Image (cartoon, rainbow, N blue to C red):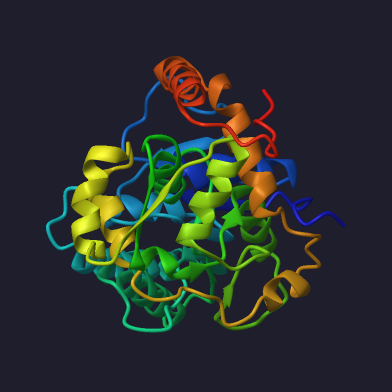
Length: 334
């Protein structure tokens, strides 16, 4: 029987975010009845989804959203928002959500978090891990999936490395860019999340969902530069700390500054998975490589609607005209 043939209802918090937007059609395709939360009902929302007005900052709005739900996806965070203390806000939201889910009889929570670094966790990563601990300790069995850099058009992590690769006349390489992580394609993350609904476990658990290759941030930028057929000088800057780099990114990257700052502060140490056993548990096929994912993202930029697509086309045209070329590297196909 197909996992969704019983028409179980699943709730996606963060359903209009970049992960939630990709997860919605995947769950619908598996036969689930999908309910999505939004802070404000408006025209233009996906008509295949049952939309409910709910806000994690107002727990009284969650009871109706969670009623009759089999599995709830927790895809929200408070970084880059209006909260002065995002960690406290995230703790409170997780506690309230778990309590409401328990009252509603939800059978499983699936949470998308971040991996534990080898060294000291940044405030961002520490908060993500704490949210996972809160949800897993709740009365509702919780599957926590930990992903580091998710590669997708609206991912702040992707926007940062993409902009550093294409908007500078040289590769600025502070020492913190040597820290390693396992970038993972959004498509693989979506499959991992959807598989978690019916994962055969009876209690709460966490799993890393890494991409197929461990890369330093420097190697990520070099790969993107090469895919675009550019040849740039590299400048080592040993004194440019992550904290100073966050301010520099404000001038270079289109990513939300508050979010970008927290992400960069997490790059002081390697952020590597403990293992990749989740992919085996779910019989996941080969994961999409970094180069293939980056190639697809870069090639599709000009097809983005509105100003974002136009600016991407203009920007790439200027970059290609002004940058020295590498004859042995093929330009990204349109």
